[in-house]
Image (cartoon, rainbow, N blue to C red):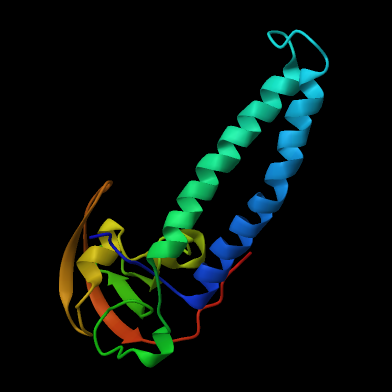
Length: 163
């Protein structure tokens, strides 16, 4: 059984848009290959090789995006409870050692943007936060070591995605 890929409507539309753009680009690249073939010797034909590489990339990406779209589970986080950390929850954490507050929103893997506080539900941090409540203290194992956090707040806020 294939695993569903949770995402917001924004994430789904982002994938759909890329899929459509690549489908539109593909015939143009095929034409470039045909034009480049007319130049004769293909062994030293840079245009031909560049177009072939682009076509291979497009085909691989189309396959990947098609799979993602087929497995997409579009979730509206505003309709979910946020008494515990879950998909679409915003969680305010206190790094106990550094006495620093940080805030993350749990999103789908295609929407992740840690610099903007959006982390994928399947990152090590998010996996360890899911199900936690305000007041919980956890030790999170991250690639850079263990960090002790206190969950200060769990709530929903509309997600602002950056393009």
